[in-house]
Image (cartoon, rainbow, N blue to C red):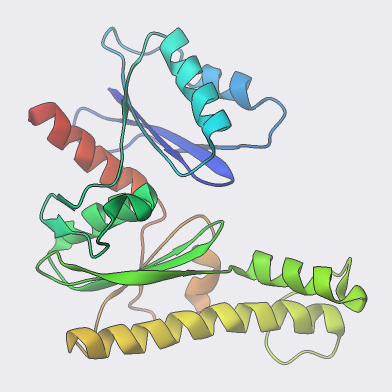
Length: 248
């Protein structure tokens, strides 16, 4: 089995590619955890003789070096995955492909397996949006704040909002809930506006919306029932890319 690691801005997600092509259960470790390295190394035990790891990361150099050191110490051969201009039928819109986060690149690879136009929305440390047509052409995207970032920015700017813990449920009768609801509606508004514009861009009134990321499921009750959710989309793309590299 091949080890797959997707390291974001706040968590490192780890899984193994099973012989049938599927993925083992995903383990996520917070990057700021005091025992991060020991928890990571616990995931490296009991591996088969051939130890191959595919590593995709948008984290900083220090954490990347620590992860790679742990992998090498455990006897893994490491392939660091980076964004390519074109791969598996997907063509990246960025003229400088390396500027596109490798997580978004891998999500595009996984989404293209359905061979249909898609708006991909990832809700993690940041909110990212990407437009992909059925032929594999990436039409660009956007990056913005999540609910957590929006609330933190408001608390940092206004003293009366500090230390509040509210729930998002629409029109609210107290400040804590009003702040949480405003952040939720901002994120939903961005998604809905991007969805409308992408549908016009691709001339597809029923453009599929694919949600991913650790916080995506919280938004599903506020979106149409036909919205798809694949929380491990980046790891699915990493598995595809790993198989491609191994067969090359």
